[in-house]
Image (cartoon, rainbow, N blue to C red; front, side, top):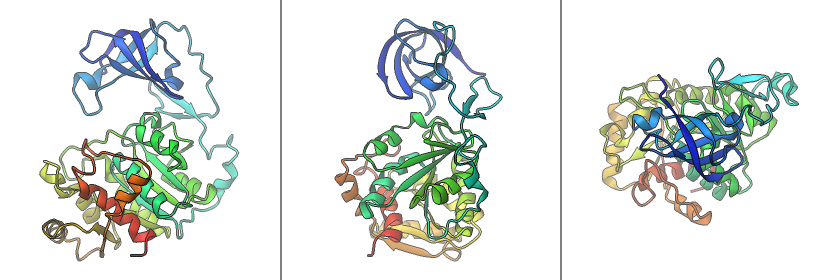
Length: 357
């Protein structure tokens, strides 16, 4: 069941193009809420609204903010419907129309009759949304002329508008375009699925590098395969079979207290062990001797050393790219100084394909 409460908008904390942060008078310990303007229209102080309070009541990682479902003070939503006859979140009370890039009303429609060609294209696949900032910065640092697209899948936050990382990257010119697929929405372009999103990024927009990830707020259950990023293993195989230079970013941490994510994450190991059907390079960063041994033992014990080639790259140059662009990203609340190997892994993957070392 959805938990919802009636509330009054007390203050507008921030209004951006697609998103408002508001402070509510509400019978709930959490008083902050997000309002998606293209879904519920602009709200103003004094408006009476209906807020979805479920995540905050359950104290989930996706909590911290309520979500405005309706504005009782507006008889109708006056925001234009916009173009497109495709629906996302379809058959739910929140269904929203979008213009799919491949639908008949799109000026790009005819271009999708050509087959997907990924030969030579760089594809980086990462399971955490927090990977996108250091990844984009290091790609641009390594090759400034590279044009980058990010494909956001629907296994994290669905509205792209929620992502502070994407807003930051676009404001600094480090991310050129965003494509949302499945039930994710709010990108610069909308696509039905991964195939047409790759067509759009690689063949129609002619991007040089493509990042496939999901929005913030991914799900993990502690079981071997019950996590949001599982689909990415299938995408890796698919991109490789289409001729892409596709690499999966290892999720490495020696500061995560959960044993399943200590060293190289069990998510990475299970995807490569069970889903990836062909040899794909596993690129690791240079770490101290004990940490290198720990990760190699994990890969050996899981049988991956005999299945996939292993390559090492320094990875530490990523600190220069973050410094150049004035970025201080975090992952799971930990910054570069707290969890350096996480960031070195991102640097190593980029250096494997873009830097001569």
